[in-house]
Amino acid sequence: MRVMQNVSLGAHYAVRLPAPDDFAFWRERARGLIQCDVPPDRVSWIEPGGTGDLFAAEGPSRSDKRLPAPPADAPPVRASKAFLTAARRAALHTDPARFGLLYEVLWQLQRNPRLMEDKANIQVRRIEELAKSVRRDAHKMHAFVRFREVAVEDGTPHFVAWFEPDHHIVRTEAAFFMRRFANMRWSILTPRGTIHWDGQVMHEGPPARREDAPGDDPVEDLWRSYYASIFNPARLKVGAMLSEMPKKYWKNLPEAALIPQLIAGAQAREAAMVAAGEREERVRPATLAQVAQGAAACRDCAIADCGTRAVAGEGPSQAALMIVGEQPGDQEDLAGRVFVGPAGQLLDQHLTRAGIDRSAAYVTNAVKHFKFVWKGKHRLHQSPVAKEIDTCRWWLEAERAIVQPRIVLALGASAARGMLGRTVSVSKARGAPIMLDDGAELWVTVHPSYLLRLDGEAQAQQAALFAADLAAVQARVAQIGV
Ligand code: URA
View (cartoon, rainbow, N blue to C red):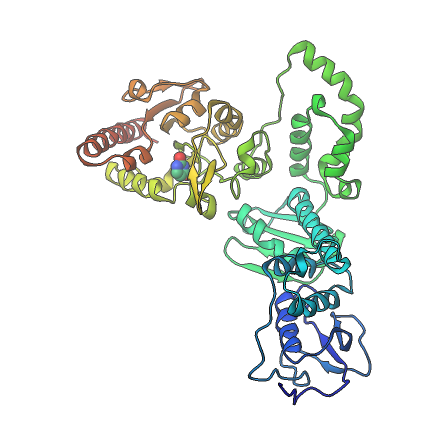
């Protein structure tokens, strides 16, 4: 029998958490207490600002000396994966009893490792409820954070959003926004804390007030017009809409101001749509930052829910040459940058050999999200279908209208379709420019990933043709003098 030398019989322990969302700290302390056989009714868990048990032996910080030290021969603590997954989320809930509840269940798991499977157990059910409510809060944050552009001294746009989460989710959700808006400088202000991304490093700050965030500005107008244009009266289901976009979030959403009038006008608009076969009219973004933000929020096709983020185009907003690929690949999706994976590296080599300066070109894709299927642990690229390219074309057109390139190089059939709105055969179209409506020249060639799929003689032949296409584009760029 193990002797718990460090545990005072009948003592009550209080553990002070350094932060209300510090699951790792809770887990470390809970393990130690379990190994010392301290039952749940002899532990209080106190969050910052919370009150504790005045008679308890307190654990004030990470270097807490008063909690008992586990004996060297203590058995490992058992915690099922199901428990840890649910507990990690439930710990972010605002219920002050959550850490005690988690300890109680962890305690029971030592005797009954399959406890989490018992869906009738009231404590298991409560943990799952807490986890669900935190998940829902995170989902709302992903959907309803709206950035407003603010002017900053060095002229680089900075985007600021105000959001009121129900739970302590701000720090854990920072990674989502970092991935999704990797190329933007942004801040999310909340009454529970603030996070700031400068394009490279995430910073945390103290809680903010609504007044600290900017109010109405032109970016909001853009959101409103965008929302009004994607609002499809034929699909209006008020109940579903309210459950997806609960009224309490409306006050922070510029587009929400439109909801009552949109609902009111829905029937009339539907009739008009049916009658006129109306095509949606949208207000075009005026800046590349607005394109990036709009594409990130776009849900016009199913691909948008596929990857990690929309990958925005990159390069000077007045570039003479625009290079269009198909869609971001696995690595582009993760990095949030166009053409950084294997196809991008091959493209870079060919551009350099042809004398084309990639940094002077605006580089983008016909489709802004990564379409893939899971194969084991790998995400396998899937080509976008014509309808998806056509849907995303709106963003490509917006980019072209802003950048106004004199020459566009389309890499592959999807890029060519994105530019023209119709399918062309690459082998027939390559070698001579196609005149676009604004007088710009469209040059079509193969996609570099096509070369990656070949080998031997076939690869050498196609690489030579690709190099010749790029050389022709470079000659044209030099000739036009741009
Ligand atoms: N392929 C593309 O078409 N675009 C990228 O950004 C990467 C790979």
